[in-house]
Structure formats: structure tokens, C-alpha cells
Length: 348
Image 1 (tube, rainbow, N blue to C red):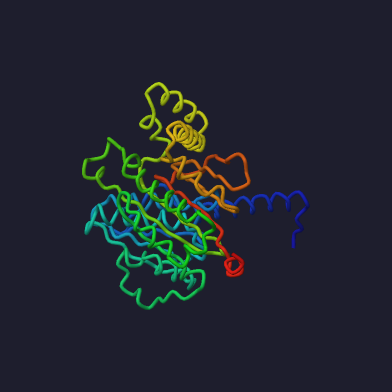
Image 2: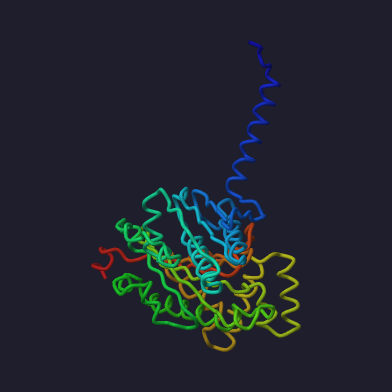
């Protein structure tokens, strides 16, 4: 048998490593062109769903959107490999599927291959995703896992404050520290109002589509932390800068944001909102949405909008912001509040 010298062995390892890396990229990143086979678009999702770099669900959602524009298409969502579902990624998928169903009606049909992982199936059942796409065997799935039964979901239009109770149950409100239950409620209500006033200002869309201004909301409890996630599929915060401010100021802000990316645009919009709030002595807009729970120990807010993100945490003076690889095509806001434990409530 012919021996391989060290250099040849190293070269072979480099080639094999590169080949493996390409296969992994192809597995996670679907082709940009959508292939239809007998009117079916088969979209396979990866093992873990997220929206941060490396776990991007956005390319897969892009394929769902492309298929949703073709009349008579049967869209098969293959989630069989999914094991972990990030709340932000799940609400983005749910929102896009629900939006396609609402706009296209019977022109598009969805089919589903359930995850092999039982807990992932339970999550899909618990948040109403199976009901949304009309999965007819959902009765066989019974959510029972401790970190699944505390997922809650709702959706709506405009400022429907009563729906806050649908995701933040009464028994949870007693575990939110101090006055932060009311502050979280105000943040969510302001996000709802923001959707109807700013999020869907896209003049290039038909009137019927511009009047459709939905939002979606999830809540989740994990490790005694309440996470509330809010999503809309509007134009995104960066594109609303010229609308929110006077022409000259908007031009300066937009120029700065464009050169620095969407993360910077989100940071500018939030900073300007906070400044205007202080001047007018009223808590409105992005400033209230992002700053209301920061004083709570362990509190955190994360905003994703188009291709940018913004994060503020309790105890950290400066916010973090930056870019993500693929646009989410809208805005997601995530609030995180540590819950009081039973021992803490007893002590109080």
C-alpha cells in the first residue's frame, strides 16, 4: 500500500475540511432560487432555529415568502430535524406563515412534517402554530413538559392591551418584581400602538395590504425568567427614521444610519425618542418600549429590526448594537424579566 507523506496528508485534511464546511453551509443555507416540483415547495429547516448569525432562520423564511407568492402552491414545511426553537425565530416563522394565509387564503396550502423531537412538537401545539396551518392530527400532541406549558401566544391589531393578559397570566403578575408588571404592560401597549402608527407605512404596497397591520406576541418562562416577544412584519425601524422626524434632521439621521448599518439606525431612533420624551415629559415611543424594565435587576430588552439589533441590560451603562447577516423583514422586541421565586415572595 502506497504511503502518504506528511505534506500530502496535510493537503488532504485541508481539502476534506473545506469540503465538510461547504456541505454544512449548504445544509443550513437553502438555495436562493425556489424549486417547485409538481406545484410543491419543500422547505427543510435546520436542527436549531434562531435569528442570530450562524443560526439564521431568515433564508428559510425567505423561501416560504417566495412560495407564498405563487398561486396554487403547496408549501411543505419540513421541521423533522428541528430540536431547539428560539422564541424570536419561532414568532418570526409563525408571523410569516399567518400573514401568507391571511393574504392568500385558499391560493396557498401548507403541509407540515413534524419534528422528531417530541418537545419541539409540543411547542408548536402550545403556541397555536399547528392550528394556524390547519394540521389535522394535532389532537395527538399534548403539551406536558414544564418548559413548554408556560409558552403562551396571541395576536392582534392596534393597541389591544387586554391581550397582554393572554401571555402574562395572573399568577405570573404576582411574581414580577415591584412596579415592573405595569411598566412591562406599558411597553407592550406602546409597541402595539407603534405598529398601527409607524410599522406598516409602506407606500409601495396596495391599500388593502397597507391596512393589514397585525402583530404577534409570545411569552415563555425558563429558569425563572419571563420572556415576552413581540413581532410585526412592517418596514422596520431603520426605514421609519425619515417619517418620524423633520426633513433636515431625518436626512442627517438617515445618512449616519446608512453608513453604519441598521443597528446604528435602531440606536439613533431609540436615543432620539428618549430625548423627545424627556422634553415633552411624557413616556411614549421607542424610548418607553426599550427603557421601562432596564431598572429591574436582571432586566433586558433586545430589538431586532431588518438587519440590525439593539440590546440594553440592567447594570450595563451603554447599549450594544450591530448587524445581523439576513434581514428579518420587520421588527422583533424581546423583554426579559427575572421572576420572584417562592422564597422571595414569602420573604416579601
